[in-house]
Length: 137
Image (cartoon, rainbow, N blue to C red):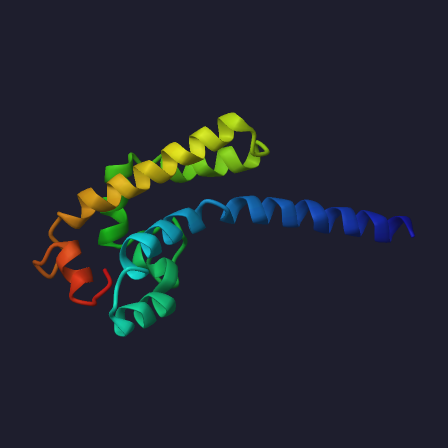
């Protein structure tokens, strides 16, 4: 019985660690979806986003620290600290200070999208032009 309790405790601790590691990612995805996907009338863009998901910024099959050109540009314009700020704020328990940090992080993400949108992609078009044409980075 004692071993089962220790096993359960270990599982809970492991799950808590795992969940806290993944919390920062949905803020970027949600912000991208709100800015570009939700207002779009292009069903192909919506389908591509549903399929590509986090790989709009990341490289499929690689560690989440590996970003594609769009993700690298976004990281540059957001200062590279936004994901850490979000993770720390969520881990703190959600008090007023954490909410303020989250609000500032979301604003930085939105401003980053605006700046990245003006950048040229490897194809030569700006990222905003690509997305308006129904292509994801």
